[in-house]
Image (cartoon, rainbow, N blue to C red; front, side, top):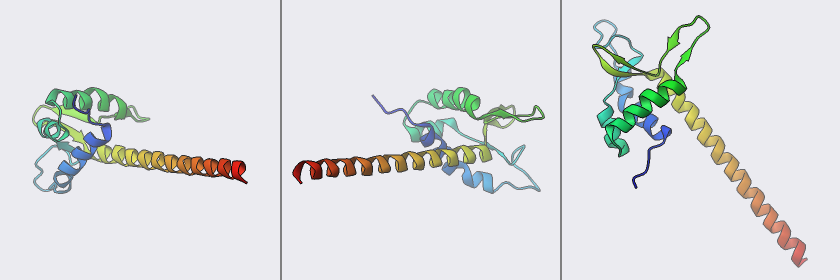
Length: 134
């Protein structure tokens, strides 16, 4: 069975694949409706992640949209992913970057906790050895 890509892997692919498109937005003659909305090709992301296109579309549209979209105090909705009539599928790129930064922070925190737990186990084993052999 093929591995299912993690949210982190999908978000990394979107970020690194479309970062340059986000940066090169032209204010005078824009090539899309809004700077923050960057059109994406689900097929390319799926290919890079090694899964079917429908899997990536479903994850982005149903999972990411529900998990990362939000409504502010004024009732305005900010969506993670949208389908625009003229632009096709697009993501809120700053929101992608923000979620990716959170995922990196979570990963670093998890790695730190595992490292501390590993040190605690080593200290415990050394303590047991010292207690039995001294």
